[in-house]
Length: 143
Image (cartoon, rainbow, N blue to C red; front, side):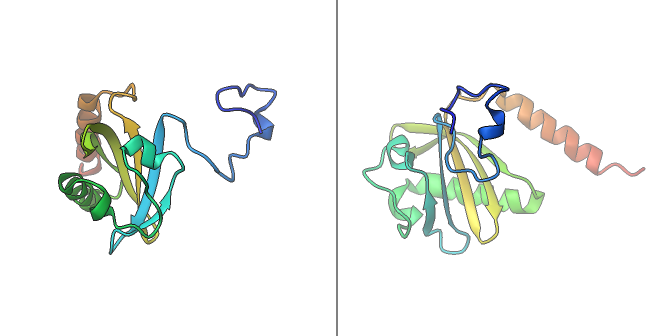
């Protein structure tokens, strides 16, 4: 396997993109049960990136993250379900002193939360909001 960031056209065929085994080093990922919010999957770097001592499948999300963060994730999940697309949250204090941008979506019975350091993305918060409004207007237009 080619080291992250070292791929080129001659090594692309060796990349196991059909069987993902890792995530980009500037982010982390975890998933939890859609109904109970019990952790089911956790990337190896999640605990460190979130400022937690540990984070393992079987832990309850409400016991690890701040109350406000869990509330925001639940609200984003509701939006994701109703709009049928991932929900994005910016500058969420997931644990004290750890601000992150989040993407929340459903995969089967799991809520998947992808995390990046705040500001790691080049996409403007304002432009995402404006783009969503425009797309919603286009979807609702009668032809």
